[in-house]
Image 1 (tube, rainbow, N blue to C red):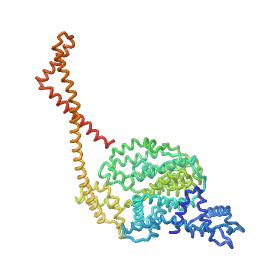
Image 2 (image 1 turned 90 degrees about the vertical axis):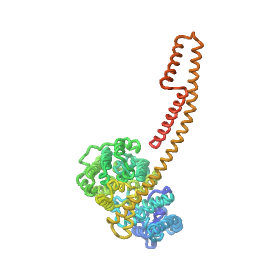
Image 3 (image 1 turned 180 degrees about the vertical axis):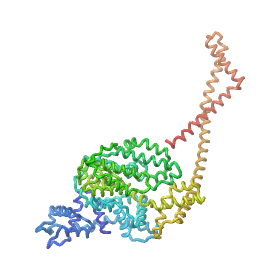
Image 4 (image 1 turned 135 degrees about the vertical axis):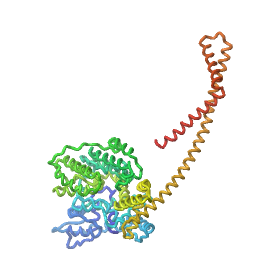
Length: 637
């Protein structure tokens, strides 16, 4: 594993040197040639074996021939009688990498040391730095979708079922360390890039022309869209938005089928029905979407708003074009029935949207094949159209159906890991976007690994129902536990403990989790009450300050106004008495003013000083309402 780490690190260090993809591997070939027998010569197979032995590189025969041609151009070898010989004048010692490997791998040893410390502190597990690095590298390699178009794709896309506890511990460390140290995120991204580069030697696609795509249309699947819309959590949203920007930077034309928008609406409609009732909340299957709905306590009205604004958001926020499905041409769409059966067979049982999902996927495949008009290509540049999904099952089963139909080349459906890696290798200008996507994708992947298994979640729900039936829990309390922020993490921790003890989840262990969740909720309720009391006290103090300030302001506004009214009345009386020859209109105004003032005084007891006090009170109340109403509106804005 140390050898493989060195190779990955060396590849990553050469990525930014502006070399073409094959040239990245030439130094490895020259180093291997330097250790081959030159007296009797060597064959292509000998170079393959040495590369595997020295650098853990599985290089295809055709690629080895290309590497030998590059070495020949550098005057490092010559060929006679079908065998290759070293040119002893060439300095092969400069390709031994010893010093470079030591410097590059030292930074990764720091990660291994931190991982070993993490395992000792969190799980009392003792491992060496090399063992920790080996586990980390294995996790990153296994969880990446290899860039293979051949028969191994079905294996590459399978979920890893072995050593789940090891995977969870590794994922937990990655999330812990990247949040604690930004440098770790950079180092892990470097490791991933080296892994992708190493795997891509098996992919013919990367041998094509470099640069932006010119005529490639990509149609995004429902799961990509839900993630980019922020309905599956912030981590997935960041990863999917970065993925879309990566494709756009590489020149890919981005579309979404109207049929896909319809499926998103159907899913959100179904979710709005389920979250409207306690039984519906219990029926939510553990997915990224339902976890986010539970975590954010999203109401049905909010989902209906998402539905109403869906197309506007897709066009405005994500800048995707919306396209109708083209008319089917049976000549190009092949055996749709067998594809539907393959997808339905592997779809999750009990999913109320299973059949509509299968229909959507079949319609999308038929649309891509119709747009291709029967053309097949091994180069992504010439594929015309592809459908991109996050589902390994959809990508895998479509690929198997594609090959069973006798076709080769780029299948109609590709996994987003695959195309993101190809885009990154073919379009150097998109590498900064790829780093953003890769960082988000790794974090989302680790969070997915840490989610409890479906069987554990089902046992959790069953145990809650039993507690409700026995009267130990109310229905509302069970719903609160299901929606608890701590439910998923607590069940995941339980699986860690059970893996260590080599036992399965049972009702008793689930009951222990429920008790801890109740204790946590009680503490949260107490904290909430304390917080609410503090907030109420703060609001009361603020309101008192506002009233005091408003009274002062009202007094300074009302008193000058009252003084002007008083002067007007005095002036009117003096003017009316002293100037008897005034015009009838002026006399009428003065008499009316004095009459109204007299009646008000006699009937309602209104005095001049009362007018001033009431004016101050009314003005102060108005100021208080304006300030407090403004304060209440600020959070909503």
